[in-house]
Image (cartoon, helix red, strand yellow):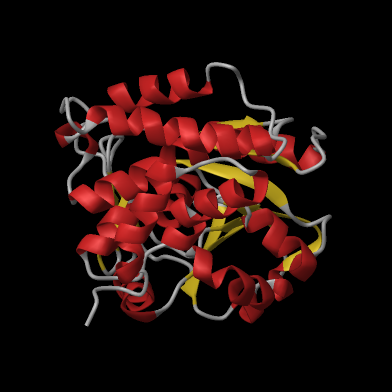
Length: 307
C-alpha cells in the first residue's frame, strides 16, 4: 500500500515511521530543515516502543512529484489546511483516502470542497510526539492509536484495508462508523487540555492533582460536551467522566502540541480549539465561561510570542 504523509511533524512522522518499518511504501511531504535532514540522514523516531531510523527516507516538498497513492495521512497545522489540500491534488486518485489527523473538529469539512467528498475521510490521532530537531521525532508514552472512518459511516474496502495495514504496523487502527462522535470525544479533551497547559506552561502531571487547578479540567470538559450536544453530536452520557478518566491515567509528562508551540514561541492553533468552542457556544446558546477566559488570555500568542 502506498502512503503519503503530508506534514511530517510529531504525528505524521510518528505514524509514518511505524508504517514504513512494517513495509509500507511511505513518502513524506515536508519542508525546510526537517526535510533536508530526512533527505540527508533519514528520519529518526525515538520511542518507548523501540527506536526507528528510516535511512534512506522517501521525502520531498513537491506533492506533484508523487503519483496517486492509496492513503494520504494529512497532518499539517490547522492554518495550512486549505493551501496544503490544494497542493496534494496530484496525489489523490479516484480511490485515494485522505485522512485528516489534525486537532480540532472541522478539517474534513474544510477539505471536501477542495478534494471532493469521495476522497475525504475523518480521522482522530492517538499519538503524542513532537519534532525535537530536524530529522528527529520523539514519542511521549507508548500510545499508538488511530481512529478513522468514512464520513457517511460506511465500512469501506479502503478503510478495512488501511486498518489491516495499521495492525501490521502495531498501530491500533480503528475503522469507525461514527467518526463525528470520535472527533468530538477527542475534542473535549484536547481543546481543554491544550489551553489549560498552555496557560500553565506545564505538563498534565503537574496540574491534574492540584486542588486549585484540577477542577478546571472537569469544568472545561463539560463546556465542550454541552456545545457538542447542542450542535447535534451524539456523545455518550458519560463523555466527561471518560475524559476525566483518560486524563487521570495519561503519562504525567504529557503536554499538548499547542502548549509546546507556545513554549517555543511559535504560532498556536487556539482559534480552532478553545476559540472554536467559544464560537460554537455562541451559535448554539451555550455558555462557555472557562473557554472564553482561556481564549482571551491566550489570544495575544496566536501568531507566536508577542513582540
